[in-house]
Image (tube, rainbow, N blue to C red; front, side, top):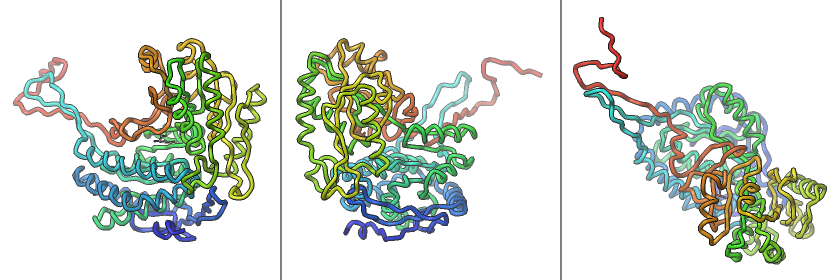
Amino acid sequence: MKFLEELGLKAVNPGVSTGTKWMQGNAGSITSWSPVDGRQIGQVGIAGEQDYAQVIEVATKAFEQWRTVPAPRRGEIVRQIGEALRARKQALGSLVSYEMGKSLQEGLGEVQEMIDICDFAVGLSRQLYGLSMHSERPSHRMYEQWHPLGIVGIISAFNFPVAVWSWNAMLAMVCGDVCVWKPSEKTPLSAIACQHIIAEVLERNNVPEGVLCVINGGRETGEMLASDQRVPLVSATGSTRMGKAVATTVAARLGRCLLELGGNNAIIISRDADLDMALIGSLFGAVGTAGQRCTTTRRLIIHESVYDSFKEKLTKAYGQLRIGNPLDETNHVGPLIDKDAVNAYLKAIDACKKEGGNFVVEGGVVSGEGFESGCYVKPCIAEARADFEIVQTETFAPILYLMKYNTLEEAIAMQNNVPQGLSSAIMTMNLREAELFLSAAGSDCGIANVNIGTSGAEIGGAFGGEKETGGGRESGSDAWKNYMRRQTNTINYGTQLPLAQGIKFDL
Ligand code: UN1
C-alpha cells in the first residue's frame, strides 16, 4: 500500500518519540491489524518505564525553552504543521481509514479537522487575551495574564485516532505547553504517521526536542501520565470507564483533567420537522463511522403523529446502505474496530431483545468475500423504551433505538434522562419548539443543534459534554484556557501603599 510508504511506516516501528528522535520502546510491541481486511499492518514498540522517564525529562527541558518563545512564533510552527498535513492529507486519510475502518471520505474529513484546528490555533496565537480590571485603589493597575501550564498528557481514542490529538496538541502548543501523546493501542500507526509528518516541521524550525512527544502503549502507559505529578493536565478521550479511572488518579494529586467521554445522543423529530432533512441527519448520525463516534445518533425520539411514516422512510434508507471496504468510496458503512467491538454489538442486540425491543431492521455480522476480517456488521434499528437498560448504555456500534413521544416536554425529558450528556438535536420548523429545546429547560447536553444531526461538529465551537461525558470542552471557542494557568497581577505605581478593603494598618 503506497500510503504506508509515503508516511514512513515500516513493518516494525519505534513507538516512542520526543519530536524528531525515536526510541523503540522497551516494553514489547503492539500489532496493528486492519479491520478492513484483517491483515497485519505493522508493529509499534511500547514505552516502558525507562522510556517514559526519558520522555518526561526531555519534555520538561523543552518546556523551559518553549514557554519563552513568543506565542505568534509558536503559532508559525503550527501554521507549518497545517501545511504539512495539507500535503499529506490523502495519505494520512487513507491510513486512518485503513487502520480504523472509517470511510475514506471520513478519514479525509478527519485530517481536514486537523488542518482546521491548525488554522484556528494560528489565529489564536495572537489572541490569548486576559482581562484588565479597575483597581479599587488609586494609582494601581490590575490585570490577568495567561501563562503556559507545562506538560500536557493526551490520551486519545481509536475512533478519531489523529484529529482529537490535534485539537489538544495544536492549542496546547500555541499556549506554550509541551505535549506527551498516548494514542489508542488500536490505532498506533496513525499516531506514528502523524509524528513523522510533524517531525519534518520541528526539525526545519529547530523546535526544541520534547515539544511534541508520543508514547505508545496500553492502559499502563496512560496510568503513568495520570499519576505523574509533573503532568499538570491530562486530556483524555474514550470510554466513561477509562475517564473515571484517569480522573480519580489525577484528582488524587490535584492535577487537572479534560475529559471527553461517552455519549448517548438523541435526535427529537417533531411533527413540524422537515422529514427529508431529518432522514439525512439521522442516517449519517447513526451509521456514519459505523456508529463509532462519541457523537453518533443512538436514539430517535419521534412524535407519534409522524412515527410510522418516518420509520418507513428510515427502514427503506437502511435497505440501500452499502456495507464494505471503507477505502472504496461507493460504500457507506465500514467495519467495527475489532472482534471485541463486534461481540459488544451482538450482546447489545441480545440485551435489547431480552428487554422487549422490536427490531425493524435486523442486525448481524456480515460474512463472505470481502468481509474476512469478521468486523463488518449490519446497522440495525430497534423500537425500544427509554427505560431499557441497554438504551441507557453507550454501545459503540450502529444500533439505533426508536421511541415515540407526545408532548415536547416529554421528549426533552426522555432525551435528558440518560447518564451521558454530549450531543443532542431537534428537527423542527417550529420556532417555539426550537427555542424551548435550546433553553435552560431544554437539552442538558454540551452540544444542542437545531435541524442538524448530533454528529459532525465543527472545530470552531467548544466540543464536549456534561454528566458522564466528563464536563471537558476541547477545540474551539475559549477551550484554550484549559491549557493555561491564569495569573492575576496588581501593580502599584503610586507613592503610597493603600490596603484593599480600606484596611488601615498604622503603627
Ligand atoms: C469523537 O467521536 O470523539 O462531531 C469526536 C463529530 C466529530 C468529532 C467526533 N467532529 O462527530
